[in-house]
Image (cartoon, rainbow, N blue to C red; front, side, top):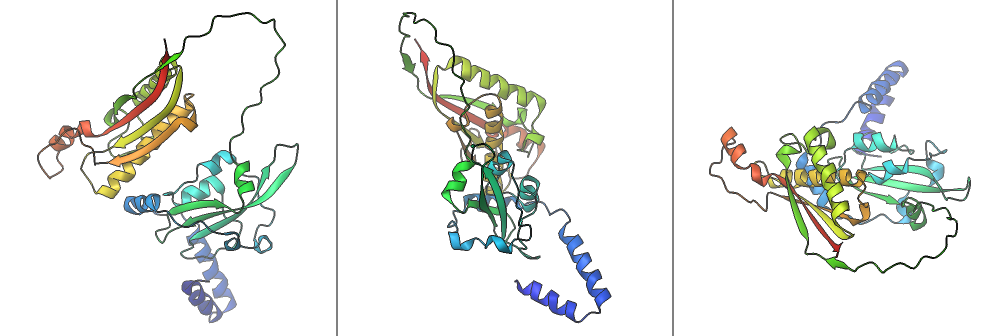
Length: 310
């Protein structure tokens, strides 16, 4: 129990029953209101942090849960949990935690999730923890056991057995020729609104560019080893803000490429922030002329390593 909670409970004991009920109701109402905007610097710090993962004893006993029935989660929502998210975003994906974690400054949410094993109606009951820093931004999410974490991994699609066909002798396919990594640069001003990096900030022409790029990659490469998506920004704003914005844009482009059919396992994202400019412009005051001059620095680069047929 935090010091604030202890003070609040002592205050409740000093009130009459009616006032205590009203105070509790007001407090719970306040706790349910939407959270404030995420501080970009706090978000960048959370994404860069590498905290020690909890051990089994750090998870609370399941019999202490407020909602002991647990839930069958949407695994796509669970896979979206990552460092740098706010509490409202976590709650939107996972709903409220299943334990009574407290009221103020809570830095840990715990859940009881039932995961299907793939064997008929059989499922496994697991514990899941999301941790926050003192700015209430996620620093990590953890399963209590490796067996539970394995059940959240995407399963390969089942392939039905095809009828046996006569064997036809065919000429061997020509070998594929490895290529030097091919780099494509997309100007973010044509993809996102200025200062934005989410799918909501994506302009219609930007989505079309990414869809077309995915089709060209699938058509031109017979095999792909890796695809690296790197976000860049101009020098306007702090280093932490630009690092967070560049990574957010790179992750958005990655999600669109996956939706367009690119294997998610081949994709990696990097947020380079303002560290790799391609143009240098005079001036320190943010003016329309400076913003226009720095436009080439605001870009997303996609580097594809693979091979093409002879």
